Structures are given as C-alpha cells and as structure tokens.
Length: 330
Image (cartoon, rainbow, N blue to C red; front, side):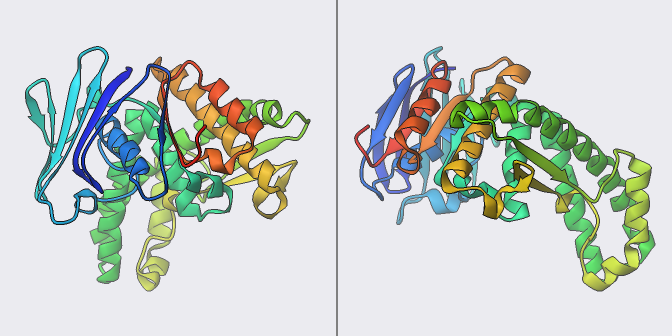
C-alpha cells in the first residue's frame, strides 16, 4: 500500500502536523530535535500497531491528555490511532479496535542509526532485532513468541518464590512447545539469510569477502521432549538462580566476516555494509513470503553512510515507497 498522507495531533512535540507523501521517495528535512523521527514512529504505529521506541504514555505531548495519529493510503483506507492516557484504539472504516488487526498491518523496513551497532549490541538486542523481522512475515512466529514470553515470565515468578518442580510442570510444557517451534523457525530463517548474505555484501563492497551469521542456541533440535527434559533437569539450578537458565530466550546471533567474529575485526565501513546487506535481504524475505513490497523508513541514516552506500540504499529500494528523515539537504 502507498501512503498518501499522515496527520498528527499532540504527538511528541507536534501539536499539529501534516505530511503529504510521494509515491516513491519523501524526505523530511530538519534539525535534530524538530520531531522528524516522531513522524516515522507514528507511521510505524499505524502500520505495525505499536511504537519501535517508546510506550504510549511517553508519546503524548507534554501537558496534553491524548494523542491522535492518522494515515491515509492511496487506495482510500484510513487508519486513526488515538490514546487518552488510559486506552489506545484504532479506528478503521468506522470500526474501533484495541489493537491493529492483522489484516491492516503492513510490513515495514525500519532503518535507524542504532541498527548500525547491531553487531556489537547485546544478545538481547540482536534477538529483538531478528524477532521483529521474522514476526513481520510469519504471524505464527509472532504468536509463539508472545506465548513463550508469557510462559517464561510466569515460570520465573514461580522460581523466585521457590515453587516446587510440580508447580512448574504446565509452564515447562508451554515453554517446550513454543520454544522448540521458535528454534525451528530461527534456524530456518538464518539459513535463508546466509544463502544470499555474502552476495549482497560483495555487491556493496566490490570485493570477495564473505559474511555469515552463526545462530547460537542452547537448544540443539526442535524436539519438544528434549526441550522439556532440559527444563526439568535444570530445576535445582534455576531455583538457586531465580530464573530459567535454559531456552531460546538465551539465543544469540554472531556475525562473522571472513570466518572471524565481526565485532572487533570489521572496520566501520565493513560494519555498515554488513548491516546494509542485511536490510536488503530483510526486504527480499518479506517480499518473497508476503508478496508485498514493504514500506521503507530511513531515520537519519544518511549521515552515517558515504555517498556510495547512500546511492546503493536508495537504488535497492527503488520499487518501494521510501520515507527518509535527514538533517542534511539531500
């Protein structure tokens, strides 16, 4: 879907704001602190259902009681999100819902400056990054992740209260069910990324270097029984620690450049090219699995890229609608 316009009220530092979008590339130009990123945040909420950086309470303009964000697509569909410090609602075709319906969600490639630190980020940061990617083209992945996180939270609460092994039984079953499924998906999707990763990277760098992502997990297969058994066997250890020590919530994704860990060995330019290649593959995967061309939101990343990489970024997404924020007049 192509965005026609975006309107904001009491959203961050915007009392009232309107943006008319072009079919291909729209540039939001301005100094730091003027609210450029907030526009992309609103678009993300209206296409994905939630912010990529904050809670709704943090989004409301200071001293105001509500925010409103509205998006209109060229096909006539209009989505309005409203939050009044108590409830958040989406209005679509005169129907109100608490959450953005699946049928109204649209895939987004979000590129923010912090993504360039992905390689050196924490394991939790990398898990969150890839979870967001996989959830966009596989709703079953997203559902399994939500259910896993809920079960993990409940199990950890019981462990903190020194609950007996029998009290953990039902939560162990749920963690084994969804954890083994998530492991299967993660392994499959990382293999797909690795299939094209080096080619994408070489097209950016113009050399013969190789890049690879190693999916590290305590889980060794997608067997629910083995997963469950590991949880049971770790009970005494987990009681002492007060949390669940085994599972896919401890997974990590390690980037390699020429068979060496990229964190510490890759130069600044090589790191940026690795992330750029990953973004290109992300778009390809979403297009392949959903048959949709994702919306591309680029938040002030041009200042982090040289002229060649800027050109490659725009050229690669020339068939997508792109909305760019920049402090430079590009």
